[in-house]
Image 1 (cartoon, each protein chain N blue to C red):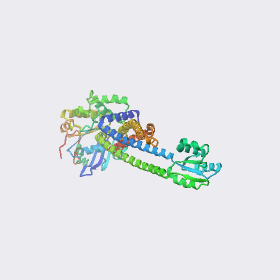
Image 2 (image 1 turned 45 degrees about the vertical axis):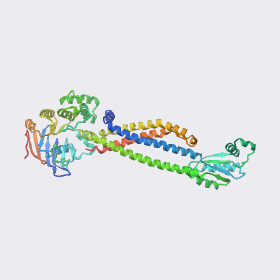
Image 3 (image 1 turned 90 degrees about the vertical axis):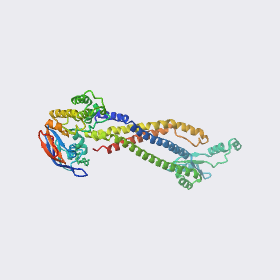
Image 4 (image 1 turned 60 degrees about the horizontal axis):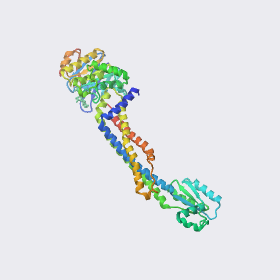
Length: 299
Length: 228
Ligand SMILES: Nc1ncnc2c1ncn2[C@@H]1O[C@H](COP(=O)(O)OP(=O)(O)O)[C@@H](O)[C@H]1O
Ligand SMILES: [Mg+2]
């Protein structure tokens, strides 16, 4: 493409947007509405998954050892556990540490009566954190069979609830994103068709004079892309400014949950939302205009 | 320059619009095509523009076998044909200058040359000073001049016109026809479909008469032929 043609294309794209104000506005509004829904939905789902993930990371399996087990064997068991694929990391808690944390948590100042004695001398353990809580049951079964392991503590309810919730959220988000995309493509193709019917004559005239398909299409397609980009802006700006307020409100309103509810920051949300919104907006604008112009271009 | 050999065209509905038409037009000729409405004149023009494909027969224009053109070759082919219609077919939302410049942009003429060529062709058709007007702000005669300027700006060897004066008053009709004649004298082959008896009789050009899809007469320096 020659330089002059390139500039002609850009100019016509811009001119066309202003010339067909209402058509452009309708298209921008459609894309904006879809992307706003998408953005809100993404923010909610991303936070949900984040909360679940945080909670998951807190879930651990505790492994206690046979009485008087040697330090070497304990280290060996540590290696065995670490090598399991579903294990994220393990943490060795010595008997003294276990006693300290027990004191802190349950006894407070009354602990002084015990002096320097450790009444739970055999409470050294590994805290095992999983990559994927749904594998917990399997891991527990395995650990119980390991030589030198006395007891394995775990909480089925938390693990199952979390992995179930995670699955549910994934399915729901897939379904909703699918519906949103279908709706937006339907709306866009309608809007573009209305716009194109106005210009059908124009396209035919261009073809009579000997314009190539590319020359006729390029300004329309550029226009579609531009509309897509413009359509991205309102929802992104809106979410950017509203998001922080909502997070602040939730955190102050439900203070007792603030331990459990950890929210993503605006910039964490935008790391994904910005490129994905742009891609969707440009994609819809491109596909909508390209396919519709193509349909009407054969003379 | 233009050769039709046993060309027939039948639309999906009904009788043939063209029936075994053979015709030869030499470079530099000025040809009127006359005939009642429905006799196949527009169909003939559409075949030459490759808007339609012939049902049978062969069409050669500028040495090109028109029916054999691939879709992507059509634009190149059409750039060798200037074309003018009864309803002008201007781009409504562009001004006079842009309408004419458009034909040059299509063939990627450098901007500098467009700025020279467009004013020059506009003054040839008598529209200097109306560059910025929109088609809506022009009379029918003026709009047809814009269309003519657009058809001519790329110097096509052939000019086709389908009832170019059908929407014009007698004065404007005469002026447009005079322009065609000038263009023809400058070397362009001109084919004009028309109903304008007075002009055809006065200009004494070759006249091809059609009726019901066949050529019924072909006269050198002829006159308008009534239905036979
Ligand atoms: N698109 C079409 N579909 C079907 N029939 C058509 C079409 N265009 C023209 N015809 C028919 O073909 C014949 C010739 O039409 P046309 O070439 O337009 O004649 P003219 O230009 O001489 O008035 C007419 O009978 C007309 O009804
Ligand atoms: Mg006709």
